[in-house]
Image (cartoon, rainbow, N blue to C red; front, side):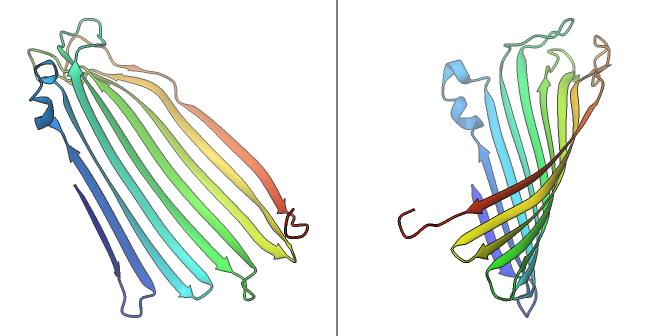
Length: 210
């Protein structure tokens, strides 16, 4: 199932919005096959984008994206001291970005700056067979980046150059009892990293064939 909505937000149409959402619910199909009767699967995601046009050469865009995926099947991976008959896999993603685009008056160049934040969390769940406890093991990756670049036509050539900085925050693994008395919590040490780069690109055109 999916839904898409696109509309101006203000009367002058300087602010526009687009929203899109999808969902998949396949559990009833698995029930038709004996071997897959204990299998479950569903997903959903949505994105929202707002764009503000200050004028014909300057734009500010805010974008967000969220996704959720869930999958359950008969036990293939065990956890010590836990009596579980199935495994559940759950994935969540949350991204957002803010971008400013400025086009030169002659239309031959632009300056684009973008901030991006992303958060990704995979999770493996071991539901206990005779209780409501659902001990789980999860990890997390967070990324925050800044990218700024210029682009300019130079006669028959085009130059692109800029800078990018990315900060990474990684949680390698965390074991959560989540109601179980048979599991002790475990938290691996968080890791951090920073990546910085400069880049440049020149497209040269020598006549119509090269």
